[in-house]
Length: 307
Image (cartoon, helix red, strand yellow):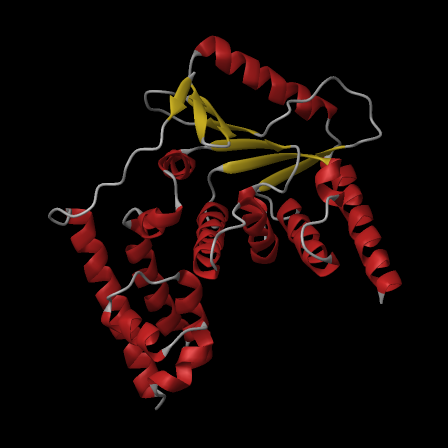
């Protein structure tokens, strides 16, 4: 196994070509947003609350001086009531801005081992993820992710938490809005019942899982607690398969201070076999949906009793 180490991030130095391209894309997008705002006779002060920010935040966005957050851009576009053609133009500019190593805009909250995984996910043909404690990051709602981040980083300030949540949301959007990779998610049933936040957060999260289960891109399989099967891994596993490249597959196993990227054939066999056993033991897709619905009813019933 190769243990991924955190490396110090390079600071300073001349801008790379990708930096110049991203800066140009940011400026073009900012100009388009300013044009939309001014065409509707709106001031910076009027639109600042739309993106939960200040006048200076909107101004920086329109000047291309800060990386555009997809949520902010789309919220502004909806507020402006842009037509279909304007929206397509904005989405194209946003895509150009994001394509330049989009996750680098979150470099202050993204360890190097996770950057590598995000890059590999974009190249993968298939992803299989097993989780024994929480909903996988690529299937979390914002509210669920926010509670998870606060639990894992209790000393983090609001801005840091917001940026980690935004990274997860953007990562999910980019993975789910493309034909590939196909995703298989294997979840222990306890994940569905383990409260994260309040009942409303769990209801939203379970509804999100149900949507994912019906979207055609995600095969969502639950490992029932009542079913007898062999010992399960005590940690999450992500297996990625690629069409070509130096490695046609690898396994990713994260731990508290880093992650292991497994490419050795014998070690890969162990992880592949473990996931195959889990798939065999997991409920089918229809039964898995019923298990999610049952967990959702329990949270809703508990909310009613409390109320």
